[in-house]
Image (tube, rainbow over all chains, first blue to last red; front, side, top):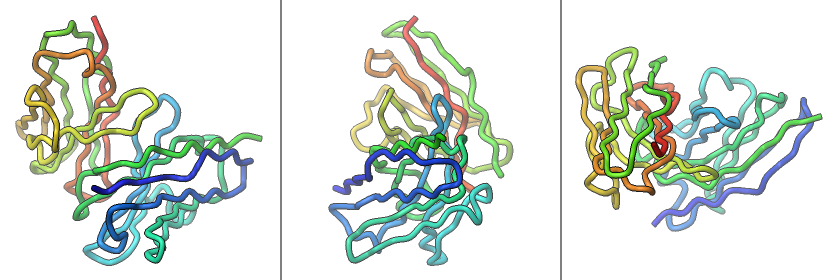
Length: 119
Length: 107
Protein backbone atom coordinates (compact mmCIF):
# COMPACT_ATOMS: atom_id res chain seq x y z
CA UNK A 1 0.00 0.00 0.00
CA UNK A 2 1.31 3.41 -0.97
CA UNK A 3 1.66 6.01 1.78
CA UNK A 4 2.44 9.70 1.27
CA UNK A 5 4.09 11.73 4.02
CA UNK A 6 4.42 15.49 3.63
CA UNK A 7 6.68 18.06 5.28
CA UNK A 8 5.46 20.31 8.05
CA UNK A 9 3.66 23.63 8.04
CA UNK A 10 5.47 26.71 6.77
CA UNK A 11 5.10 30.44 7.36
CA UNK A 12 6.55 32.67 4.65
CA UNK A 13 6.67 36.37 3.88
CA UNK A 14 5.29 37.77 0.63
CA UNK A 15 7.82 37.44 -2.17
CA UNK A 16 9.57 34.46 -0.62
CA UNK A 17 9.61 30.87 -1.87
CA UNK A 18 8.45 27.67 -0.24
CA UNK A 19 9.46 24.09 -0.93
CA UNK A 20 7.12 21.32 0.20
CA UNK A 21 8.16 17.68 0.17
CA UNK A 22 6.16 14.48 -0.23
CA UNK A 23 7.82 11.18 0.58
CA UNK A 24 6.39 8.03 -0.97
CA UNK A 25 6.61 4.76 0.90
CA UNK A 26 5.51 1.34 -0.24
CA UNK A 27 6.38 2.01 -3.88
CA UNK A 28 9.06 3.45 -6.15
CA UNK A 29 8.44 7.06 -7.10
CA UNK A 30 9.78 6.48 -10.61
CA UNK A 31 6.84 4.13 -11.25
CA UNK A 32 4.26 6.68 -10.12
CA UNK A 33 2.82 10.00 -11.26
CA UNK A 34 2.73 12.38 -8.35
CA UNK A 35 0.71 15.58 -8.53
CA UNK A 36 0.01 18.61 -6.38
CA UNK A 37 -3.38 20.07 -5.47
CA UNK A 38 -3.97 23.03 -3.20
CA UNK A 39 -6.90 24.27 -1.16
CA UNK A 40 -7.16 27.81 0.15
CA UNK A 41 -8.97 28.24 3.49
CA UNK A 42 -12.68 27.56 3.04
CA UNK A 43 -12.24 27.10 -0.71
CA UNK A 44 -12.26 24.25 -3.19
CA UNK A 45 -9.55 22.09 -4.71
CA UNK A 46 -7.15 23.42 -7.34
CA UNK A 47 -4.82 21.23 -9.41
CA UNK A 48 -1.34 22.73 -9.73
CA UNK A 49 0.53 20.18 -11.79
CA UNK A 50 2.44 16.93 -11.70
CA UNK A 51 4.25 14.26 -13.66
CA UNK A 52 2.81 13.26 -17.01
CA UNK A 53 4.10 9.71 -17.45
CA UNK A 54 2.86 9.53 -21.05
CA UNK A 55 5.25 12.27 -22.12
CA UNK A 56 7.82 11.85 -19.36
CA UNK A 57 7.69 15.43 -18.12
CA UNK A 58 6.20 17.68 -15.48
CA UNK A 59 3.02 19.43 -16.52
CA UNK A 60 1.81 22.58 -14.81
CA UNK A 61 -1.49 24.42 -14.65
CA UNK A 62 -1.17 27.59 -16.68
CA UNK A 63 -1.93 29.69 -13.61
CA UNK A 64 1.32 28.55 -11.98
CA UNK A 65 3.58 28.46 -15.03
CA UNK A 66 6.84 30.25 -14.31
CA UNK A 67 6.23 30.28 -10.57
CA UNK A 68 6.23 26.59 -9.66
CA UNK A 69 8.81 23.86 -10.05
CA UNK A 70 8.03 20.23 -9.30
CA UNK A 71 10.86 17.76 -8.99
CA UNK A 72 11.36 14.14 -8.04
CA UNK A 73 14.27 12.57 -6.17
CA UNK A 74 13.93 8.91 -7.05
CA UNK A 75 16.88 7.98 -4.82
CA UNK A 76 14.81 8.89 -1.76
CA UNK A 77 11.34 8.48 -3.33
CA UNK A 78 10.60 12.08 -2.43
CA UNK A 79 8.81 14.65 -4.58
CA UNK A 80 9.11 18.41 -4.14
CA UNK A 81 6.94 21.37 -5.05
CA UNK A 82 8.57 24.79 -4.95
CA UNK A 83 6.39 27.86 -5.32
CA UNK A 84 8.07 31.25 -5.65
CA UNK A 85 7.02 34.90 -5.45
CA UNK A 86 4.52 34.02 -2.76
CA UNK A 87 1.46 36.20 -2.24
CA UNK A 88 -1.12 36.22 0.52
CA UNK A 89 -3.56 34.34 -1.72
CA UNK A 90 -1.09 31.45 -1.90
CA UNK A 91 -2.02 30.69 1.71
CA UNK A 92 -3.43 27.20 1.42
CA UNK A 93 -3.06 23.55 2.28
CA UNK A 94 -0.91 21.88 -0.36
CA UNK A 95 -1.61 18.21 -1.02
CA UNK A 96 0.42 15.70 -2.96
CA UNK A 97 -1.57 12.90 -4.55
CA UNK A 98 -0.94 10.01 -6.89
CA UNK A 99 -2.37 9.41 -10.32
CA UNK A 100 -2.08 5.91 -11.75
CA UNK A 101 -1.98 6.83 -15.44
CA UNK A 102 -2.43 10.52 -16.30
CA UNK A 103 -4.81 12.09 -16.83
CA UNK A 104 -6.67 10.29 -14.13
CA UNK A 105 -8.14 10.39 -10.65
CA UNK A 106 -6.16 11.07 -7.46
CA UNK A 107 -5.60 8.23 -5.03
CA UNK A 108 -4.17 8.26 -2.43
CA UNK A 109 -3.60 11.75 -1.09
CA UNK A 110 -1.00 13.03 1.32
CA UNK A 111 -2.18 14.62 4.57
CA UNK A 112 -1.46 18.14 3.35
CA UNK A 113 0.97 20.90 4.26
CA UNK A 114 -0.31 24.28 5.39
CA UNK A 115 1.60 27.17 3.88
CA UNK A 116 0.80 30.58 5.37
CA UNK A 117 1.96 33.70 3.57
CA UNK A 118 1.91 36.71 5.85
CA UNK A 119 3.98 39.80 6.45
CA UNK B 1 -10.40 24.28 -19.58
CA UNK B 2 -13.38 22.16 -18.54
CA UNK B 3 -15.55 23.89 -15.97
CA UNK B 4 -17.21 21.58 -13.45
CA UNK B 5 -20.27 23.08 -11.77
CA UNK B 6 -21.63 21.41 -8.66
CA UNK B 7 -25.07 21.90 -7.18
CA UNK B 8 -26.45 22.54 -4.73
CA UNK B 9 -23.75 24.26 -2.69
CA UNK B 10 -25.33 22.87 0.48
CA UNK B 11 -27.63 19.91 0.92
CA UNK B 12 -29.45 19.37 4.21
CA UNK B 13 -30.38 15.74 4.69
CA UNK B 14 -31.69 13.67 7.59
CA UNK B 15 -29.91 10.43 8.49
CA UNK B 16 -31.42 7.52 6.60
CA UNK B 17 -32.52 9.68 3.68
CA UNK B 18 -31.09 9.81 0.19
CA UNK B 19 -28.85 12.59 -1.12
CA UNK B 20 -28.31 13.38 -4.79
CA UNK B 21 -25.36 15.62 -5.68
CA UNK B 22 -25.02 17.05 -9.15
CA UNK B 23 -21.97 17.95 -11.22
CA UNK B 24 -22.20 19.42 -14.72
CA UNK B 25 -19.26 19.60 -17.12
CA UNK B 26 -18.96 22.52 -19.55
CA UNK B 27 -18.05 20.12 -22.36
CA UNK B 28 -17.99 16.41 -22.96
CA UNK B 29 -15.71 14.49 -20.61
CA UNK B 30 -16.91 11.01 -21.54
CA UNK B 31 -17.10 8.95 -18.32
CA UNK B 32 -13.89 10.44 -16.93
CA UNK B 33 -15.27 11.81 -13.69
CA UNK B 34 -14.31 11.02 -10.11
CA UNK B 35 -15.93 11.93 -6.80
CA UNK B 36 -14.20 12.68 -3.49
CA UNK B 37 -15.34 13.09 0.09
CA UNK B 38 -13.57 15.50 2.43
CA UNK B 39 -13.99 15.79 6.18
CA UNK B 40 -12.80 18.87 8.13
CA UNK B 41 -9.04 18.93 8.55
CA UNK B 42 -8.55 15.88 6.33
CA UNK B 43 -7.38 15.24 2.82
CA UNK B 44 -9.97 14.32 0.19
CA UNK B 45 -10.75 10.63 -0.15
CA UNK B 46 -11.57 8.93 -3.45
CA UNK B 47 -15.11 7.56 -3.55
CA UNK B 48 -15.87 6.88 -7.20
CA UNK B 49 -13.96 6.94 -10.49
CA UNK B 50 -14.95 6.40 -14.11
CA UNK B 51 -18.37 7.85 -13.26
CA UNK B 52 -19.67 4.82 -11.39
CA UNK B 53 -16.92 2.54 -10.09
CA UNK B 54 -16.59 2.56 -6.31
CA UNK B 55 -13.07 2.79 -4.93
CA UNK B 56 -11.81 0.05 -2.66
CA UNK B 57 -13.71 -0.10 0.61
CA UNK B 58 -16.43 2.36 -0.38
CA UNK B 59 -19.89 1.21 0.76
CA UNK B 60 -22.59 0.18 -1.71
CA UNK B 61 -24.76 3.13 -0.66
CA UNK B 62 -22.52 5.37 -2.78
CA UNK B 63 -23.35 5.28 -6.48
CA UNK B 64 -22.54 7.40 -9.52
CA UNK B 65 -24.41 7.95 -12.76
CA UNK B 66 -24.08 10.03 -15.90
CA UNK B 67 -26.45 11.65 -18.37
CA UNK B 68 -24.51 13.43 -21.09
CA UNK B 69 -22.40 16.01 -19.31
CA UNK B 70 -24.38 15.77 -16.07
CA UNK B 71 -23.01 13.51 -13.36
CA UNK B 72 -24.75 12.52 -10.14
CA UNK B 73 -23.43 11.09 -6.92
CA UNK B 74 -26.19 9.42 -4.91
CA UNK B 75 -25.82 8.49 -1.28
CA UNK B 76 -28.58 6.15 -0.18
CA UNK B 77 -29.52 5.69 3.47
CA UNK B 78 -27.27 8.52 4.63
CA UNK B 79 -25.15 7.67 7.65
CA UNK B 80 -23.69 10.07 10.22
CA UNK B 81 -20.20 9.52 8.82
CA UNK B 82 -21.33 10.64 5.33
CA UNK B 83 -21.74 14.28 6.28
CA UNK B 84 -19.03 16.48 4.83
CA UNK B 85 -17.84 18.04 1.59
CA UNK B 86 -18.02 16.32 -1.78
CA UNK B 87 -16.10 17.24 -4.92
CA UNK B 88 -16.30 16.02 -8.49
CA UNK B 89 -13.27 16.06 -10.80
CA UNK B 90 -12.85 15.53 -14.52
CA UNK B 91 -9.78 13.86 -15.94
CA UNK B 92 -10.72 13.77 -19.60
CA UNK B 93 -8.54 16.76 -20.41
CA UNK B 94 -5.64 18.77 -19.03
CA UNK B 95 -5.86 20.80 -16.89
CA UNK B 96 -7.53 18.54 -14.37
CA UNK B 97 -10.41 20.44 -12.83
CA UNK B 98 -12.66 20.12 -9.81
CA UNK B 99 -16.14 21.28 -9.06
CA UNK B 100 -16.69 23.86 -6.34
CA UNK B 101 -18.01 21.28 -3.90
CA UNK B 102 -21.28 20.36 -2.20
CA UNK B 103 -21.59 20.36 1.55
CA UNK B 104 -23.84 17.63 2.91
CA UNK B 105 -25.07 18.64 6.34
CA UNK B 106 -27.38 17.20 8.94
CA UNK B 107 -30.96 18.42 8.66
